[in-house]
Amino acid sequence: MPRHPAEQERPDGEAGRRRFGGRALAVVALVAGVVGGVVGGVCVAWLAPDDAGSDGGPVTAGTGMVVGTDAPAAGAPGSVADAAARALPSVVTVEVRGQQGSTGSGVIIRPDGYILTNVHVIAAAANGGGEIVVTRYQDVTQIPAQLVGQDPKTDLAVLRIDAGGQLPAATLGRSSSLRVGTPVIAIGAPLGLSGSVSTGIVSALDRSPSEPSTAGGGSALLTGAIQTDAAINPGSSGGALVDGNGQVVGINTAIGSVPGAPAGDEGQTGNIGVGFAIPIDYARSIADEIIQTGHATHPYLGISATTVTQTDAAATGRAPGALIRDVDPSGPAAAAGLRVGDVVTRIDDAAVSGANQLLETARRHHVGDRVTVQYQRAGRDATAQVTLTEQKN
Image (cartoon, rainbow, N blue to C red):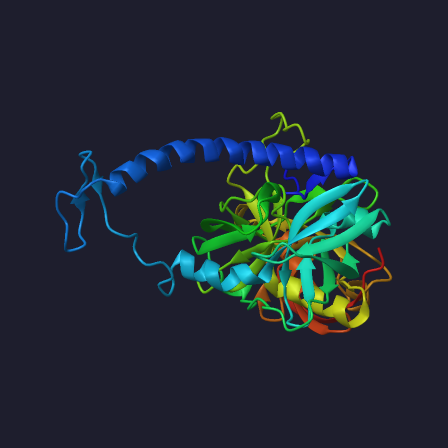
């Protein structure tokens, strides 16, 4: 079952932080030891007399090793290095200090200090259990953060910091422009390693995995998610999924885990090439509403549905789409005349190919919007005008 790439949890507060830091440093120390040995050997080669290469090309050092030229210049337009350079200053590390500490990531979305992250990253602080601090890219200063508002239904939260000036806000792209196979970059603080970058592609769109809920246990449904094989690990939550132009197209939120596989000593598994991000088109709308009002609302159709696939349609004579299996008698769909057994095929200009897309398409609108619902009943096409209301639970 997919799980949070959750914040790196530290259940025993400061002691937990020290223990996690110790493990991280142990890994770094091991790498440093290996690198130190390699660097020593390389220095001998660099300092030895060159046999050739006065023109700056490859040379043969006195040890017989071939030493190449400088690495290709990074940052060419459209390169991973260029996209990462554009986005990295806007990605921050988010830490909750307290008895239930955690570390995750966030994205600066406005120059005046607003940061978008996941609810599960700051859940402990939101429940009165700690203080939130933010660390900017390539900076050691920890800045206190205020929780502006949160929306557990979408696992999105907004923080605000006062850094004494304008901040490098991310450019928010258009997740609706993504296609399967589009190159993307994940940026965050996996395992507390701030400013980490990984690359991959969009593996799929409109996924709806379940993830652990921060409100009373159980699980929540992440609708319309972007699936990617870019490495996402515990601590990447709330970080940025970026396109080739350095624009944020998603908020990293969850990772897949192999059913039955043993978890690590923190109760979490790592990247297996299946990660999920909340599309920025939707996240932007939620964030804006939280900034304006302190909370988010969710448009409600008042129906539940199941998917009619192309195969089902051929076998039953129904149109492919979302088959209504239950209608709230006091909801907006019932008021517009929709019934159990109708198959919704389109909302406004968006085709509806199944139940998840029905929910996702409705969520792209706002409470009070009047939408045109196209549906099929008993083999006949029809339309209804539905005014979306606010979902209460």
